[in-house]
Figure 1 (cartoon, rainbow, N blue to C red):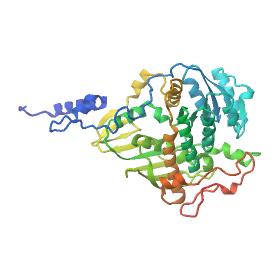
Figure 2: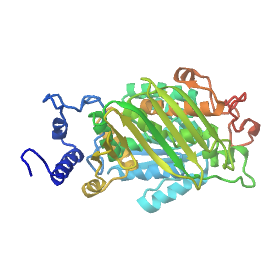
Figure 3: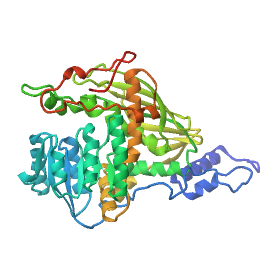
Figure 4: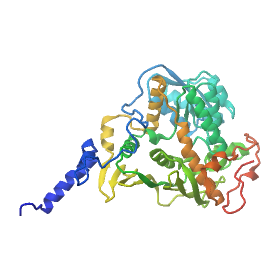
Length: 461
């Protein structure tokens, strides 16, 4: 070989070493990627300086020991029951002393599980039933509340808990309409002023792979964010056929995930997770949205089966949002973010440069070797309990309200066929709570499937 030349084998070997350096993600990688002119200025420029953004401490399996904490669970269905056990598994010295739900059978079901699996006995006088039972639970002497009812009730539960100085866990979504959004935002400010810790069910904020990805993007690994696509394309969730003897209100609440006044539709109830990732990573909120959707397979309720929305963000970049709940179709639940220097995707939890080379990839196997607790649903409770015990500020509701409102904007654009804007939606009087909400007879004629392009008033009044 002539002096000054390099073989193909040597070139590939050198390239592989450079690629490994990127995957390791050390500070040396940033220093090595400099311009040919010999400039000492790193090619990677942080989007935000370290310490200027929040990173939860997840370097543990359980919260640190501290004062005993008593929780009350508002909403004892599947998610409420799951959150109850997440709470108990997150720390020592925590318990559950009160339960409430609209229906007694759900309260008793969770009480039986707590007795059988955790040895926790909830006495009858601490089991509260009915639409207003949350007040009795909050007033029962609990320190914290786990709120996991159908989403439309979330703002009023949060408001009352904050008035009574209780720390709150709010399952997502935290509102379904502009009226609820404004209540959440106002209550979040009150909670922060009272030094109450508030956390929401956006568990990706406590999933180590997402948090590590967020850090890499903040460090500048993909450059300036220029756009993204977020997906929740999956199958049907569930529905409840109306049973003989069920009243209008009873059936709707038991079938809540299919009714827009209760769930906000699945773009709000479920897809908010993915929209939230983009608003979190970018730090931006949408200024406008144009969307469409349709109903094709759903057999109960008044919701759509699919949505597609184009969001324009504050700085002019676009986010495409896509969600579907139909069996037998191509599925994809993930997020993709494009930057000036590369891209990130959550399906592989990796960052690539513009040529498609992998610069960094999250090591899930290493996480499993280091930690026993890898469930983000439990880790969010670990962080919440630590914040309470260590008197550290933690208020997620105002941040989640942004992604929640984005989902509402997309939904309303799809329902009506018109462009929606942040300013008009946040000021809108729209309120999904029916005037006649009860467990008895309701005016079912007001719950209709939206038709875009026609005169449509989504307010269920």
